[in-house]
Image (cartoon, rainbow, N blue to C red; front, side, top):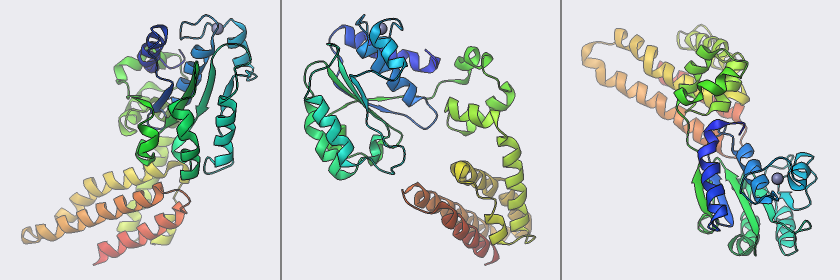
Length: 311
Ligand SMILES: [Zn+2]
């Protein structure tokens, strides 16, 4: 498989399939950059393959149709332009699940980012999720399982894509156009999500981090304004930027305050640092909500942090 860290779970599910023990509703959870989509597509291909091993042979009619994205018995419930998965899309799944497969094999539905289902969508899916019918499978993926309704979770068999160890990636990394040292440095900071680390290592992540922290230093030494600093915000890297702020507060800002305060003011120092960290956490929670203007949240975070430092 393309991503070797996914092999153990794909093999496990293929074995369950061969023993007729595979659950018909599979919820695959994993952080961004773990390869959830690739996993779901591989699993779907295995379920649809005419060889019935649970793994795609890559040669049968079904496998070839999937490659051309023209398989009549595979349906992805996805609207790339929409922020949520609307009930109309789910009704298509429900209706299609009531019909027979066209090629005589399995019928497979894939719902990516299933946490984006509205409550109405989730409710519309429940009956099909519970009993889709013989040789019909639903694969749901999410990076935010905590946002799913309990009624969805309880009807699925849940699996988690766990971060691999860096040592287990060496062979895969050899075939990627990436600086291995840069990858290793970043890998630890992105909670072990290989594809995020790869994207950052192939981009200019370390340069961006250095530039961002240099600007933050100017902010807390009063050489730039909160408004100017907030212009460094990059929505694509917002979780990383908040993480960098967190690290900065904990490390050299802590050291800086240490030299400024007298021993009897240690308590005040700790208070400022924990206040700053709390502000970052608060901003993160706000940004994780859908439909929020992240840049405005970041701007107010900058103003609030500066206020805290002045007080
Ligand atoms: Zn096949």
